[in-house]
Picture 1 (spheres, rainbow, N blue to C red):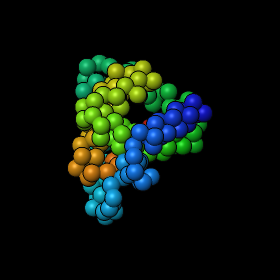
Picture 2: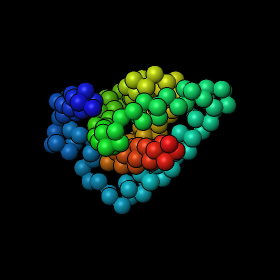
Picture 3: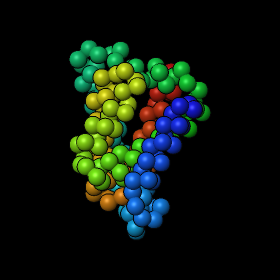
Picture 4: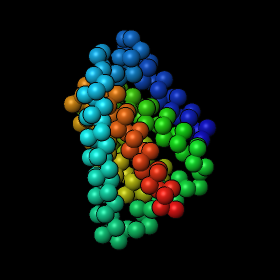
Length: 171
């Protein structure tokens, strides 16, 4: 857990250092966040993220990769729930600030999404890698449509909470 938090502090520091302007702009937030609109968009994208995640898992199950689909859950189940939740909540915020508010803003949707996927290679799961790429593309598209990180952060956070809840209920 300490290593994850240290990594997130480093990523957040890089984003703050390389982006110029007021703190909210440096974090990737647009000037005028439209809370109601951006929250509604976040909820729509949450549904899209969940559907995409289920579809990726089903494809890999059909390919006979049952063990690979389960790798991430097996790793997370070994960590106390409160630590998983802390990391996922911090991670949702920092990953969106870093990958969307910094990387995507300076490059493009595909580069940011591939780097986002590669940052999840710690699970040693091809399914996780492909799934995270798809999620990164959706979150990146959401960032482009809303013009800021608020909506992707909310979608990412709710997605993580839903996925962890489902994983722990399935135990």
